[in-house]
Image 1 (tube, rainbow over the protein chains, first blue to last red):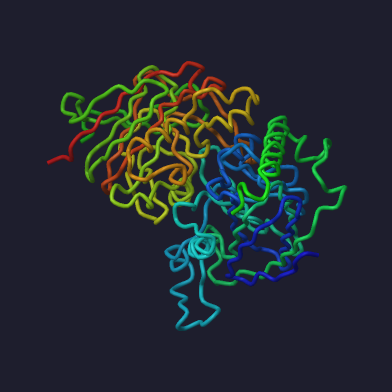
Image 2 (image 1 turned 90 degrees about the vertical axis):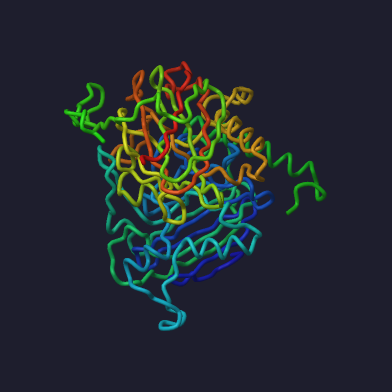
Length: 248
Length: 233
């Protein structure tokens, strides 16, 4: 293991994943919501794009076999394992107003480090550590959360989507800055602020886990075959540019 | 304002879901700005708080990719997810408040004779066209290029960082209850329009979509008409 770390309830996190590393998120207690954003670690102007991810794969949610596209037609990370089955892409992240409406003020003065952190503020803090800011905030993923829509588009929170022990394996297809916030989903009707801890681990992909020609994420759609081709062309570009080109 | 509108509920023949349509009483000759934007062109303009902005789908089924920014602080900008979540619904129509990432309404849709507009489908780009259609489609004109050229011309220091997920007026991207996303035939028709009131001073940014690879423009990108009225006295 390259890293094993507990992401406490309310906590923010960011780290660079090297191409070929696998990040596992485990919802040990069940009912977690980990809001996430992804950037090209070498050039964060390239970032996760919700619309391109959904359009290319004709889906409104993420699960095993699907990939997260950047706005440059490349695959940032692939979902190579998922015991949960549905990860939300469309409902955004909570902010301080939503948190106060649900849970009350929840300030540090009263609660010390149990104070009510929210995803938007967490994102701003973590992005700032990499020189990024509000202009880099885009539609995020909510791992372990599920929001459904009926024929009229009306949204509904789906309770019990993530069972205890549910996990997700994200394989980095390029050097990727991952930003996470383990904070309540704003549509979760729970009225107690109690986001459960989530376990994080990072390992290098084994030979069998590398994206070969028959890789499930590559072959799940013809679009993804082209997305991987563009991603691999970029890896060659980065490699040929050498240490002098494209380093952060 | 809507006294001449005697039948507010019209069921369209195409979709299963009946859309609620609402007409506007504003007369085009009273508009302070009125122009036709050809397909494949970008456009931007400030719209003052209280002004009314109308986009007319002149020939039908034309996707109009649109973003809004706080005119005084463009870091505050349209957020598709905040808009969806604040109204608890995926589709935009009359009554939708177009929300910023700061949780404030930029504009409110006050009239809509189309009935449903998309905000999940985003903008086409050279690179996403390669993924979606074929690697050799990179040369084709696309909305993001129009956005980038328009922002570059503005000279306000705005660029690719300032392009979050946008609105696609007149585009129909239904999500099924099992979570599939489809690009359905348009629900718009010649002359249908959407009208919105600015709730703060906003900068509007439009790409009149040049996409030829899918039915979002009925494979025939066409002009739209853009009108602005001053606030009612």
